[in-house]
Length: 360
Image 1 (cartoon, rainbow, N blue to C red):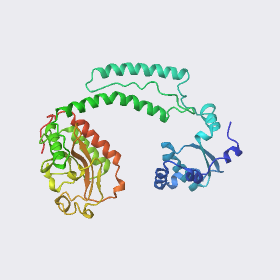
Image 2: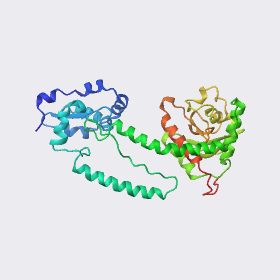
Image 3: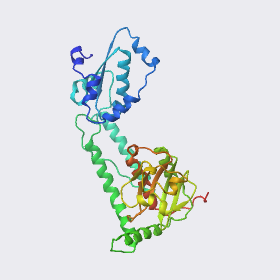
Image 4: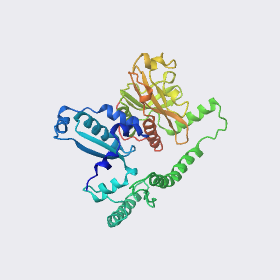
């Protein structure tokens, strides 16, 4: 059974749907601006003998809607033969029921059916097998994601489910991480005063205790640096360690020297605080415009760095990306930069490896 003309007319037009969006509107409009339809793509619809009605069930949090609906909207406009109406999913449950349960297309029901019982049984078998495997792997813990609250409105997933799972993961991870951090900290020299000189002494002590300085390159750090370069689209990237009067590079991509003077270092400024540091154009920043790294090789104009902490909490260096071309600082994904820095921090908890010779 189809939708009546009266019911179809109650839907929003494409422009009305865009106007009421509360979430992801900017992403939606970016996708829309990037849509380019060829004549070949439009022709089959433009040549339809009569207009066709197109009903879309959507939510502004859905990635498929953000990536797909702009294409449909542009296609309707270009062809002149598609009459598009958009319905919000949770406000039009009659349409959801008709098309997802009684219509031609079906989704997997929320696990409250014989199919769900089968899936649950299979999940339990996978959990048992995974638990056995993890038991034999150092530094691996298995956390079964069980006991999630039932989602509302027939959803397969809900914010409450993900929150529940996050709590399970945190409860498993925190004790191990805190025990390791505190054990490391107890071995450090206790210093009470927190003036600038003392903080630097504590920081340098943490660097020395890591035993990482002047060690051979390691694939695990090289991989993170190269990933940062690729994901940020820069010419260069590095994992740096600030050591007394120098900036030493544990990993570097498209950067020749393995160290530079601390006096000309960007990263020594980065580690002064816990936040990321972004320099959109070093030539316009009085802190760096006369730096040898700006006026000479590698001719840094754009820089973004996130401080790296030792297991005991001192900022010992940075994960950074840089390029000879300036760019707006608003284009920098600071969450991604932080995640890459945290990857380095996790590696610092394990001793330097000598798995390959120095290739410099």
